[in-house]
Length: 346
Image: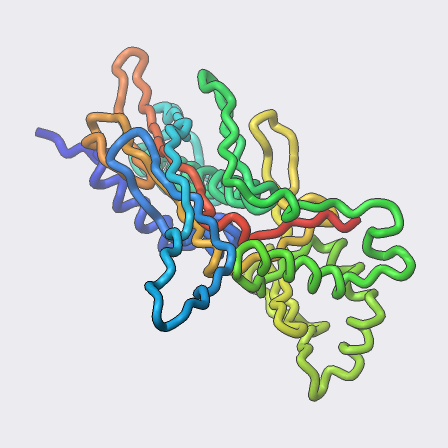
């Protein structure tokens, strides 16, 4: 029996090589705040929304019984996510065409070109899937909600019950850059809001570039920057570039300041920026308890198992063509949604 060079096991080894070569998108927000992965062996995903407001032990007389305190409240929700699904076609003709970068007269065999085309498709499919996860993580941090919509899937809004006060848009003379407005004072005020509603301190601040430029113009920030030696500020004109999209700008007080800009093409083919102009995010990095949930893959070839994603390939004889299919069933969940805050400052 001939060996199938495109069975699931061999495709998985190709995927391992792709991941090892860092072919994935940045995924700054998804990796930073939703790094935990959970798998469900059913179609549905179950998660808890936790009430994290800080409480204290009650006073009682030592001569009376202890006061019964209700357990911290939470609500268990379930959701059947839409499928993330993509199909690619590899045609025999691709084995006859010189690949980009190949020697002009061709140095590869037709079979080698087909195998390379399969690997290229896998790499691109994984990039698109991981970019989707990043878009999902971004939406949750921006709005405290997740809108799930797609072909053959009725639009649903998953509301993680973030306090409405955690999403603000400054207007008029309250915007950054206006006379008398202190961006640093705003950050401190918003951090107090997060602490009051979650009991957690948001240390990580992520700004879109134009918001950061206005932040630097804050007289208090400029004054601290000018005398930063011996102070609690370490903003730098020569920042640490974590990757080509996310940049660590330094510390000011208890805040770790980042800028982040990435783009993607949405389902309608329109170019979008992940963080809209003037966006500022405050997040309690570990307190958010962000989880990427995965439901079972409804495919016998996958064993109907809970996987982060499943890729398979098969061929048709007439006309001869090879198909590749990627499937995933995912939802990103902030268990403590009030550990995040989003402001539009421009």
